Length: 236
Length: 307
Image (cartoon, rainbow over all chains, first blue to last red; front, side, top):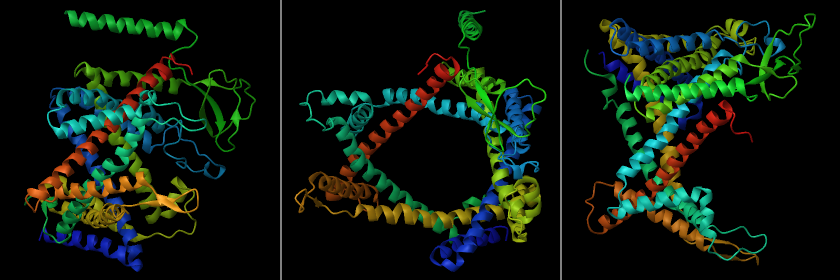
Protein backbone atom coordinates (compact mmCIF):
# COMPACT_ATOMS: atom_id res chain seq x y z
CA UNK A 1 0.00 0.00 0.00
CA UNK A 2 2.78 2.43 0.92
CA UNK A 3 4.19 1.98 -2.59
CA UNK A 4 0.99 1.43 -4.60
CA UNK A 5 -0.37 4.97 -4.13
CA UNK A 6 2.92 6.68 -5.15
CA UNK A 7 3.18 4.47 -8.25
CA UNK A 8 -0.42 5.37 -9.16
CA UNK A 9 0.29 9.09 -8.64
CA UNK A 10 3.41 8.93 -10.86
CA UNK A 11 1.57 6.98 -13.60
CA UNK A 12 -1.51 9.23 -13.61
CA UNK A 13 0.40 12.51 -13.66
CA UNK A 14 2.91 11.24 -16.23
CA UNK A 15 0.15 9.94 -18.52
CA UNK A 16 -1.71 13.28 -18.18
CA UNK A 17 1.43 15.07 -19.39
CA UNK A 18 1.67 12.80 -22.44
CA UNK A 19 -2.05 12.78 -23.32
CA UNK A 20 -2.31 16.57 -22.91
CA UNK A 21 0.42 17.03 -25.51
CA UNK A 22 -1.73 15.30 -28.14
CA UNK A 23 -5.06 16.66 -26.90
CA UNK A 24 -5.31 20.50 -26.83
CA UNK A 25 -8.42 20.61 -24.53
CA UNK A 26 -6.27 19.08 -21.80
CA UNK A 27 -3.52 21.70 -22.12
CA UNK A 28 -4.81 23.81 -19.14
CA UNK A 29 -4.65 20.69 -16.95
CA UNK A 30 -1.07 20.13 -18.14
CA UNK A 31 -0.24 23.75 -17.30
CA UNK A 32 -1.70 23.36 -13.79
CA UNK A 33 0.26 20.12 -13.28
CA UNK A 34 3.46 21.90 -14.37
CA UNK A 35 2.77 24.71 -11.87
CA UNK A 36 2.16 22.15 -9.13
CA UNK A 37 5.39 20.39 -10.08
CA UNK A 38 7.32 23.66 -9.70
CA UNK A 39 5.72 24.34 -6.32
CA UNK A 40 6.36 20.83 -4.95
CA UNK A 41 9.95 20.89 -6.27
CA UNK A 42 10.51 24.29 -4.64
CA UNK A 43 9.22 23.12 -1.27
CA UNK A 44 11.38 20.00 -1.66
CA UNK A 45 14.35 22.32 -2.08
CA UNK A 46 13.61 23.64 1.42
CA UNK A 47 14.12 20.06 2.64
CA UNK A 48 17.56 20.25 1.03
CA UNK A 49 18.23 23.46 2.96
CA UNK A 50 17.04 21.80 6.19
CA UNK A 51 19.33 18.82 5.55
CA UNK A 52 22.28 21.16 4.95
CA UNK A 53 21.61 22.87 8.29
CA UNK A 54 21.22 19.58 10.18
CA UNK A 55 24.44 18.20 8.70
CA UNK A 56 26.51 21.24 9.60
CA UNK A 57 24.89 21.78 13.02
CA UNK A 58 25.80 18.17 13.86
CA UNK A 59 29.40 18.76 12.75
CA UNK A 60 29.60 21.86 14.93
CA UNK A 61 27.98 20.23 17.98
CA UNK A 62 30.29 17.19 17.68
CA UNK A 63 33.26 19.53 17.11
CA UNK A 64 34.41 17.34 14.22
CA UNK A 65 37.54 18.25 12.28
CA UNK A 66 36.86 21.39 10.23
CA UNK A 67 33.75 22.38 12.21
CA UNK A 68 34.76 26.02 11.81
CA UNK A 69 34.11 25.75 8.07
CA UNK A 70 30.64 24.38 8.84
CA UNK A 71 30.02 27.49 10.92
CA UNK A 72 31.09 29.66 7.96
CA UNK A 73 28.74 27.71 5.67
CA UNK A 74 25.79 28.14 8.04
CA UNK A 75 26.56 31.81 8.57
CA UNK A 76 26.74 32.55 4.83
CA UNK A 77 23.59 30.45 4.26
CA UNK A 78 21.50 32.33 6.83
CA UNK A 79 22.89 35.76 5.88
CA UNK A 80 22.01 35.14 2.20
CA UNK A 81 18.49 34.02 3.10
CA UNK A 82 17.91 36.95 5.48
CA UNK A 83 19.24 39.53 3.01
CA UNK A 84 17.25 38.04 0.12
CA UNK A 85 13.94 37.51 1.90
CA UNK A 86 13.98 40.85 3.74
CA UNK A 87 15.01 42.58 0.46
CA UNK A 88 17.76 44.54 2.20
CA UNK A 89 18.65 47.64 0.16
CA UNK A 90 15.80 47.21 -2.35
CA UNK A 91 13.89 50.38 -3.21
CA UNK A 92 10.55 50.57 -5.01
CA UNK A 93 11.06 51.54 -8.63
CA UNK A 94 7.85 53.36 -9.55
CA UNK A 95 5.42 55.83 -8.00
CA UNK A 96 2.82 53.08 -7.83
CA UNK A 97 5.14 50.83 -5.84
CA UNK A 98 6.38 53.35 -3.28
CA UNK A 99 3.67 52.59 -0.72
CA UNK A 100 4.25 48.82 -0.84
CA UNK A 101 6.72 47.40 1.63
CA UNK A 102 8.50 44.75 -0.47
CA UNK A 103 7.47 45.77 -3.95
CA UNK A 104 10.91 46.27 -5.59
CA UNK A 105 12.61 43.43 -7.49
CA UNK A 106 14.64 41.23 -5.16
CA UNK A 107 17.68 41.20 -7.52
CA UNK A 108 17.71 44.98 -8.00
CA UNK A 109 21.15 46.44 -8.74
CA UNK A 110 22.66 47.88 -5.58
CA UNK A 111 20.59 45.73 -3.20
CA UNK A 112 22.14 43.38 -0.64
CA UNK A 113 21.15 40.27 -2.55
CA UNK A 114 22.62 41.68 -5.78
CA UNK A 115 25.83 42.42 -3.86
CA UNK A 116 26.03 38.82 -2.63
CA UNK A 117 25.54 37.52 -6.17
CA UNK A 118 27.92 40.01 -7.77
CA UNK A 119 30.78 39.85 -5.28
CA UNK A 120 30.51 36.41 -3.66
CA UNK A 121 28.56 33.92 -5.78
CA UNK A 122 29.64 34.90 -9.28
CA UNK A 123 33.44 35.35 -8.68
CA UNK A 124 33.81 32.09 -6.74
CA UNK A 125 31.81 30.01 -9.23
CA UNK A 126 33.53 31.43 -12.31
CA UNK A 127 36.98 31.05 -10.71
CA UNK A 128 36.22 27.43 -9.86
CA UNK A 129 35.33 26.78 -13.51
CA UNK A 130 38.40 28.75 -14.65
CA UNK A 131 40.53 26.53 -12.42
CA UNK A 132 39.49 23.59 -14.58
CA UNK A 133 41.60 25.05 -17.43
CA UNK A 134 44.72 23.99 -15.52
CA UNK A 135 43.39 20.56 -14.61
CA UNK A 136 42.11 19.82 -18.12
CA UNK A 137 45.51 20.76 -19.56
CA UNK A 138 47.34 18.73 -16.92
CA UNK A 139 45.10 15.67 -17.37
CA UNK A 140 45.39 15.91 -21.16
CA UNK A 141 49.18 16.09 -20.93
CA UNK A 142 49.28 12.93 -18.81
CA UNK A 143 46.55 10.93 -20.53
CA UNK A 144 46.80 11.78 -24.23
CA UNK A 145 49.14 9.42 -26.01
CA UNK A 146 49.00 8.81 -29.77
CA UNK A 147 48.97 5.03 -29.34
CA UNK A 148 46.36 4.04 -31.95
CA UNK A 149 44.22 5.46 -34.76
CA UNK A 150 41.44 6.60 -32.40
CA UNK A 151 43.84 8.49 -30.12
CA UNK A 152 45.58 10.11 -33.11
CA UNK A 153 42.21 11.26 -34.52
CA UNK A 154 41.23 12.76 -31.17
CA UNK A 155 44.57 14.53 -30.72
CA UNK A 156 44.83 15.89 -34.25
CA UNK A 157 41.21 17.13 -34.22
CA UNK A 158 41.69 18.81 -30.84
CA UNK A 159 44.85 20.52 -32.12
CA UNK A 160 43.20 21.70 -35.35
CA UNK A 161 40.11 23.05 -33.57
CA UNK A 162 42.22 24.74 -30.87
CA UNK A 163 44.46 26.49 -33.40
CA UNK A 164 41.48 27.23 -35.64
CA UNK A 165 39.85 29.23 -32.82
CA UNK A 166 42.83 31.47 -32.09
CA UNK A 167 44.41 34.35 -34.00
CA UNK A 168 47.38 32.08 -34.82
CA UNK A 169 45.18 30.41 -37.43
CA UNK A 170 46.16 33.22 -39.82
CA UNK A 171 49.67 31.70 -40.02
CA UNK A 172 48.21 28.95 -42.22
CA UNK A 173 47.29 31.46 -44.92
CA UNK A 174 50.83 32.90 -45.16
CA UNK A 175 51.87 30.42 -47.85
CA UNK A 176 48.90 31.17 -50.10
CA UNK A 177 48.97 33.86 -52.81
CA UNK A 178 47.44 37.17 -51.63
CA UNK A 179 43.69 37.40 -52.31
CA UNK A 180 42.20 39.70 -54.92
CA UNK A 181 40.95 43.15 -53.93
CA UNK A 182 37.82 42.92 -51.78
CA UNK A 183 38.06 39.13 -51.36
CA UNK A 184 38.51 37.96 -47.74
CA UNK A 185 41.69 36.01 -46.94
CA UNK A 186 41.21 32.24 -47.13
CA UNK A 187 42.38 30.64 -43.87
CA UNK A 188 42.77 26.87 -44.45
CA UNK A 189 42.73 25.80 -40.79
CA UNK A 190 39.60 27.87 -40.10
CA UNK A 191 37.94 26.17 -43.09
CA UNK A 192 38.92 22.71 -41.78
CA UNK A 193 37.72 23.61 -38.26
CA UNK A 194 34.35 24.73 -39.63
CA UNK A 195 34.11 21.60 -41.76
CA UNK A 196 34.82 19.38 -38.71
CA UNK A 197 32.29 21.24 -36.59
CA UNK A 198 29.57 21.20 -39.24
CA UNK A 199 29.99 17.54 -40.18
CA UNK A 200 31.75 15.20 -37.73
CA UNK A 201 30.84 17.07 -34.53
CA UNK A 202 27.22 17.47 -35.67
CA UNK A 203 27.02 13.80 -36.63
CA UNK A 204 28.67 12.54 -33.42
CA UNK A 205 26.49 14.74 -31.18
CA UNK A 206 23.40 13.77 -33.17
CA UNK A 207 24.02 10.04 -32.70
CA UNK A 208 24.63 10.56 -28.97
CA UNK A 209 21.45 12.67 -28.67
CA UNK A 210 19.38 10.00 -30.43
CA UNK A 211 20.82 7.39 -28.06
CA UNK A 212 20.09 9.53 -24.99
CA UNK A 213 16.55 10.26 -26.21
CA UNK A 214 15.81 6.55 -26.61
CA UNK A 215 17.24 5.92 -23.13
CA UNK A 216 15.10 8.66 -21.56
CA UNK A 217 11.97 7.41 -23.32
CA UNK A 218 12.60 3.84 -22.14
CA UNK A 219 13.26 4.96 -18.54
CA UNK A 220 10.20 7.22 -18.52
CA UNK A 221 8.00 4.41 -19.83
CA UNK A 222 9.32 2.05 -17.14
CA UNK A 223 8.41 4.64 -14.47
CA UNK A 224 4.95 5.34 -15.91
CA UNK A 225 4.17 1.62 -16.21
CA UNK A 226 5.30 1.05 -12.63
CA UNK A 227 8.11 -1.29 -13.65
CA UNK A 228 10.81 0.96 -12.22
CA UNK A 229 10.14 1.80 -8.56
CA UNK A 230 13.73 2.48 -7.50
CA UNK A 231 12.93 6.17 -6.87
CA UNK A 232 10.69 5.13 -3.95
CA UNK A 233 13.65 3.68 -2.02
CA UNK A 234 13.68 0.52 0.08
CA UNK A 235 10.95 -0.80 2.42
CA UNK A 236 10.53 1.22 5.59
CA UNK B 1 58.87 28.67 11.74
CA UNK B 2 59.89 26.33 8.90
CA UNK B 3 61.20 27.38 5.50
CA UNK B 4 57.83 27.13 3.75
CA UNK B 5 56.03 29.24 6.35
CA UNK B 6 58.80 31.86 6.13
CA UNK B 7 58.46 31.93 2.32
CA UNK B 8 54.70 32.46 2.40
CA UNK B 9 54.94 35.04 5.19
CA UNK B 10 57.39 37.06 3.07
CA UNK B 11 55.13 36.67 0.01
CA UNK B 12 52.04 37.88 1.90
CA UNK B 13 53.98 40.81 3.39
CA UNK B 14 55.26 41.84 -0.06
CA UNK B 15 51.74 41.56 -1.48
CA UNK B 16 50.23 43.60 1.34
CA UNK B 17 52.90 46.31 1.02
CA UNK B 18 52.30 46.48 -2.74
CA UNK B 19 48.52 46.80 -2.23
CA UNK B 20 49.03 49.45 0.44
CA UNK B 21 51.30 51.42 -1.92
CA UNK B 22 48.82 51.08 -4.80
CA UNK B 23 45.94 52.19 -2.56
CA UNK B 24 47.53 55.17 -0.85
CA UNK B 25 50.70 55.98 -2.78
CA UNK B 26 49.16 56.30 -6.26
CA UNK B 27 46.16 58.23 -7.51
CA UNK B 28 44.67 55.15 -9.17
CA UNK B 29 43.75 53.33 -5.97
CA UNK B 30 42.85 49.67 -5.84
CA UNK B 31 39.35 48.51 -6.71
CA UNK B 32 37.86 51.99 -6.29
CA UNK B 33 34.24 52.06 -7.44
CA UNK B 34 32.16 55.16 -8.13
CA UNK B 35 28.41 55.56 -8.56
CA UNK B 36 25.84 58.19 -9.37
CA UNK B 37 22.61 58.62 -7.41
CA UNK B 38 19.51 58.15 -9.53
CA UNK B 39 15.89 58.85 -8.60
CA UNK B 40 14.25 55.46 -9.14
CA UNK B 41 10.85 56.91 -9.95
CA UNK B 42 11.97 59.52 -12.55
CA UNK B 43 15.29 57.99 -13.72
CA UNK B 44 17.07 61.36 -13.31
CA UNK B 45 20.59 61.68 -11.85
CA UNK B 46 20.65 63.44 -8.48
CA UNK B 47 23.75 65.68 -8.22
CA UNK B 48 25.77 65.36 -5.00
CA UNK B 49 24.85 68.26 -2.67
CA UNK B 50 25.60 69.36 0.85
CA UNK B 51 22.59 71.66 0.92
CA UNK B 52 20.35 70.51 3.76
CA UNK B 53 17.42 72.38 2.28
CA UNK B 54 17.49 70.28 -0.93
CA UNK B 55 14.32 68.19 -1.32
CA UNK B 56 14.77 64.61 -0.07
CA UNK B 57 14.33 61.85 -2.62
CA UNK B 58 12.59 58.77 -1.25
CA UNK B 59 13.69 56.16 -3.73
CA UNK B 60 17.35 56.39 -4.68
CA UNK B 61 19.20 53.76 -6.67
CA UNK B 62 22.91 53.79 -7.46
CA UNK B 63 24.36 53.20 -10.92
CA UNK B 64 28.03 52.67 -11.79
CA UNK B 65 29.93 55.73 -13.01
CA UNK B 66 33.44 56.70 -14.10
CA UNK B 67 35.80 58.19 -11.50
CA UNK B 68 36.11 61.49 -13.42
CA UNK B 69 32.32 61.94 -13.68
CA UNK B 70 31.54 65.22 -11.82
CA UNK B 71 28.37 63.68 -10.33
CA UNK B 72 30.09 60.48 -9.21
CA UNK B 73 30.50 59.61 -5.56
CA UNK B 74 32.75 56.94 -4.03
CA UNK B 75 30.88 53.73 -3.17
CA UNK B 76 32.02 51.92 -0.05
CA UNK B 77 29.87 48.82 -0.61
CA UNK B 78 31.02 48.31 -4.22
CA UNK B 79 34.67 48.96 -3.40
CA UNK B 80 34.48 46.49 -0.51
CA UNK B 81 32.74 44.06 -2.88
CA UNK B 82 35.57 44.28 -5.43
CA UNK B 83 38.13 43.64 -2.68
CA UNK B 84 36.21 40.67 -1.28
CA UNK B 85 35.66 39.22 -4.77
CA UNK B 86 39.37 39.63 -5.58
CA UNK B 87 40.50 38.00 -2.34
CA UNK B 88 38.05 35.11 -2.83
CA UNK B 89 39.32 34.68 -6.41
CA UNK B 90 42.88 34.42 -5.05
CA UNK B 91 41.64 31.97 -2.38
CA UNK B 92 40.26 29.69 -5.10
CA UNK B 93 43.41 30.01 -7.22
CA UNK B 94 45.46 29.03 -4.14
CA UNK B 95 44.17 25.47 -4.67
CA UNK B 96 46.64 25.21 -7.57
CA UNK B 97 49.36 25.09 -4.91
CA UNK B 98 47.48 22.62 -2.68
CA UNK B 99 44.36 22.25 -0.54
CA UNK B 100 44.57 24.96 2.13
CA UNK B 101 42.57 26.98 4.65
CA UNK B 102 41.90 29.88 2.25
CA UNK B 103 40.43 27.54 -0.39
CA UNK B 104 38.32 25.73 2.21
CA UNK B 105 37.02 29.06 3.50
CA UNK B 106 35.95 30.15 -0.01
CA UNK B 107 34.45 26.70 -0.59
CA UNK B 108 32.41 26.90 2.63
CA UNK B 109 31.16 30.36 1.70
CA UNK B 110 30.03 29.26 -1.75
CA UNK B 111 28.18 26.21 -0.36
CA UNK B 112 26.18 28.39 2.03
CA UNK B 113 25.66 31.26 -0.41
CA UNK B 114 24.56 29.08 -3.33
CA UNK B 115 22.09 27.11 -1.18
CA UNK B 116 20.71 30.37 0.20
CA UNK B 117 20.66 31.97 -3.25
CA UNK B 118 18.46 29.28 -4.78
CA UNK B 119 16.14 29.20 -1.77
CA UNK B 120 15.63 32.98 -1.95
CA UNK B 121 15.14 32.89 -5.73
CA UNK B 122 12.54 30.14 -5.42
CA UNK B 123 10.89 31.93 -2.52
CA UNK B 124 10.23 35.07 -4.58
CA UNK B 125 9.68 33.45 -7.97
CA UNK B 126 7.57 30.47 -6.91
CA UNK B 127 6.25 30.72 -3.35
CA UNK B 128 5.29 34.40 -3.67
CA UNK B 129 4.76 34.83 -7.43
CA UNK B 130 2.84 31.54 -7.92
CA UNK B 131 1.49 30.30 -4.55
CA UNK B 132 0.66 33.52 -2.71
CA UNK B 133 -0.73 35.17 -5.84
CA UNK B 134 -3.06 32.19 -6.38
CA UNK B 135 -4.10 31.68 -2.74
CA UNK B 136 -4.25 35.26 -1.47
CA UNK B 137 -4.06 37.73 -4.40
CA UNK B 138 -5.04 40.72 -2.24
CA UNK B 139 -2.18 40.14 0.19
CA UNK B 140 0.24 39.63 -2.71
CA UNK B 141 -0.92 42.87 -4.36
CA UNK B 142 -0.75 44.89 -1.15
CA UNK B 143 2.61 43.65 0.14
CA UNK B 144 4.72 42.19 -2.64
CA UNK B 145 3.44 42.44 -6.21
CA UNK B 146 1.48 45.65 -6.89
CA UNK B 147 0.98 44.58 -10.51
CA UNK B 148 -1.28 41.70 -9.49
CA UNK B 149 -4.70 42.35 -11.15
CA UNK B 150 -7.23 43.87 -8.73
CA UNK B 151 -9.94 41.44 -9.85
CA UNK B 152 -7.81 38.32 -9.33
CA UNK B 153 -9.72 35.60 -7.44
CA UNK B 154 -8.21 33.10 -5.03
CA UNK B 155 -7.68 29.63 -6.53
CA UNK B 156 -7.77 27.21 -3.62
CA UNK B 157 -6.79 24.28 -5.84
CA UNK B 158 -3.22 25.44 -5.24
CA UNK B 159 -3.49 24.23 -1.64
CA UNK B 160 -2.91 20.71 -3.01
CA UNK B 161 0.71 21.25 -4.19
CA UNK B 162 1.47 23.12 -0.96
CA UNK B 163 0.21 20.16 1.10
CA UNK B 164 2.08 17.74 -1.20
CA UNK B 165 5.21 19.84 -0.84
CA UNK B 166 4.93 19.90 2.97
CA UNK B 167 4.61 16.09 2.92
CA UNK B 168 8.25 16.03 1.73
CA UNK B 169 9.23 16.87 5.31
CA UNK B 170 7.61 13.62 6.49
CA UNK B 171 10.85 11.94 5.42
CA UNK B 172 12.48 13.47 8.50
CA UNK B 173 10.04 11.57 10.81
CA UNK B 174 10.68 7.79 10.58
CA UNK B 175 7.10 6.73 11.54
CA UNK B 176 5.46 8.62 8.68
CA UNK B 177 8.36 8.74 6.27
CA UNK B 178 6.30 6.69 3.75
CA UNK B 179 4.16 9.79 3.19
CA UNK B 180 7.21 11.55 1.80
CA UNK B 181 6.98 9.25 -1.23
CA UNK B 182 3.78 10.88 -2.53
CA UNK B 183 5.29 14.25 -3.49
CA UNK B 184 8.36 12.43 -4.78
CA UNK B 185 6.14 10.26 -7.00
CA UNK B 186 4.36 13.39 -8.24
CA UNK B 187 7.67 15.04 -9.18
CA UNK B 188 9.08 11.87 -10.78
CA UNK B 189 5.85 11.18 -12.71
CA UNK B 190 5.60 14.73 -14.02
CA UNK B 191 9.27 14.74 -15.02
CA UNK B 192 8.91 11.37 -16.76
CA UNK B 193 5.85 12.52 -18.74
CA UNK B 194 7.38 15.85 -19.71
CA UNK B 195 10.80 14.45 -20.61
CA UNK B 196 9.33 11.58 -22.62
CA UNK B 197 7.61 14.00 -25.00
CA UNK B 198 10.43 16.55 -24.93
CA UNK B 199 13.21 14.09 -25.77
CA UNK B 200 11.11 12.15 -28.27
CA UNK B 201 10.25 15.36 -30.08
CA UNK B 202 13.44 17.43 -29.86
CA UNK B 203 16.19 14.84 -29.56
CA UNK B 204 14.81 11.95 -31.58
CA UNK B 205 12.31 12.97 -34.27
CA UNK B 206 13.98 16.30 -35.07
CA UNK B 207 17.48 14.80 -35.14
CA UNK B 208 16.37 11.98 -37.43
CA UNK B 209 14.58 14.52 -39.64
CA UNK B 210 17.71 16.71 -39.78
CA UNK B 211 19.76 13.71 -40.89
CA UNK B 212 17.55 12.94 -43.89
CA UNK B 213 19.51 15.18 -46.26
CA UNK B 214 19.93 15.31 -50.08
CA UNK B 215 23.26 13.70 -50.96
CA UNK B 216 23.61 15.78 -54.14
CA UNK B 217 22.88 19.48 -53.66
CA UNK B 218 22.19 21.90 -56.49
CA UNK B 219 22.18 25.63 -55.89
CA UNK B 220 21.17 28.61 -58.03
CA UNK B 221 24.01 29.79 -60.29
CA UNK B 222 24.80 33.36 -61.34
CA UNK B 223 23.49 32.65 -64.88
CA UNK B 224 20.03 31.82 -63.53
CA UNK B 225 20.28 28.02 -63.85
CA UNK B 226 21.42 25.57 -61.20
CA UNK B 227 24.85 24.11 -60.53
CA UNK B 228 26.26 21.38 -58.34
CA UNK B 229 27.17 22.64 -54.84
CA UNK B 230 30.10 20.31 -54.26
CA UNK B 231 31.02 21.41 -50.72
CA UNK B 232 27.45 21.16 -49.41
CA UNK B 233 27.05 17.77 -51.11
CA UNK B 234 30.23 16.47 -49.45
CA UNK B 235 29.07 17.83 -46.08
CA UNK B 236 25.68 16.12 -46.39
CA UNK B 237 27.25 12.80 -47.44
CA UNK B 238 29.69 12.96 -44.50
CA UNK B 239 26.87 13.77 -42.04
CA UNK B 240 24.61 10.93 -43.22
CA UNK B 241 27.39 8.32 -43.29
CA UNK B 242 28.78 9.50 -39.93
CA UNK B 243 25.41 9.42 -38.13
CA UNK B 244 24.58 5.96 -39.51
CA UNK B 245 28.00 4.56 -38.59
CA UNK B 246 27.79 6.05 -35.05
CA UNK B 247 24.32 4.56 -34.56
CA UNK B 248 25.65 1.19 -35.77
CA UNK B 249 28.36 1.43 -33.10
CA UNK B 250 25.66 2.05 -30.45
CA UNK B 251 23.60 -0.92 -31.68
CA UNK B 252 24.62 -3.80 -29.45
CA UNK B 253 21.98 -6.37 -30.48
CA UNK B 254 24.20 -7.51 -33.36
CA UNK B 255 27.77 -8.70 -32.96
CA UNK B 256 30.22 -6.14 -34.36
CA UNK B 257 31.85 -8.45 -36.94
CA UNK B 258 32.35 -8.26 -40.69
CA UNK B 259 30.56 -5.36 -42.41
CA UNK B 260 28.84 -4.25 -39.18
CA UNK B 261 32.22 -4.32 -37.43
CA UNK B 262 33.81 -2.15 -40.11
CA UNK B 263 30.92 0.36 -40.04
CA UNK B 264 30.97 0.53 -36.25
CA UNK B 265 34.75 1.13 -36.38
CA UNK B 266 34.08 4.08 -38.67
CA UNK B 267 31.52 5.21 -36.06
CA UNK B 268 34.22 5.11 -33.36
CA UNK B 269 36.47 7.30 -35.52
CA UNK B 270 33.67 9.83 -36.03
CA UNK B 271 33.02 9.87 -32.28
CA UNK B 272 36.73 10.37 -31.58
CA UNK B 273 36.85 13.35 -33.98
CA UNK B 274 33.72 14.71 -32.29
CA UNK B 275 35.23 14.24 -28.80
CA UNK B 276 38.47 15.89 -29.92
CA UNK B 277 36.61 18.96 -31.15
CA UNK B 278 34.46 19.05 -27.99
CA UNK B 279 37.60 18.80 -25.86
CA UNK B 280 39.19 21.71 -27.75
CA UNK B 281 36.03 23.82 -27.34
CA UNK B 282 35.88 23.01 -23.60
CA UNK B 283 39.52 24.00 -23.15
CA UNK B 284 38.87 27.24 -25.05
CA UNK B 285 35.84 27.98 -22.85
CA UNK B 286 37.81 27.41 -19.64
CA UNK B 287 40.72 29.53 -20.87
CA UNK B 288 38.28 32.32 -21.71
CA UNK B 289 36.92 32.13 -18.16
CA UNK B 290 40.47 32.19 -16.80
CA UNK B 291 41.23 35.26 -18.91
CA UNK B 292 38.12 36.97 -17.56
CA UNK B 293 39.16 36.27 -13.97
CA UNK B 294 42.68 37.58 -14.62
CA UNK B 295 41.18 40.62 -16.32
CA UNK B 296 39.05 41.17 -13.21
CA UNK B 297 42.12 40.96 -10.95
CA UNK B 298 44.43 43.13 -13.06
CA UNK B 299 41.87 45.61 -14.38
CA UNK B 300 38.89 45.94 -12.04
CA UNK B 301 40.88 45.39 -8.86
CA UNK B 302 44.50 46.46 -9.36
CA UNK B 303 43.75 48.90 -12.17
CA UNK B 304 46.81 47.91 -14.23
CA UNK B 305 44.96 47.66 -17.53
CA UNK B 306 43.38 50.83 -18.81
CA UNK B 307 41.90 50.49 -22.28
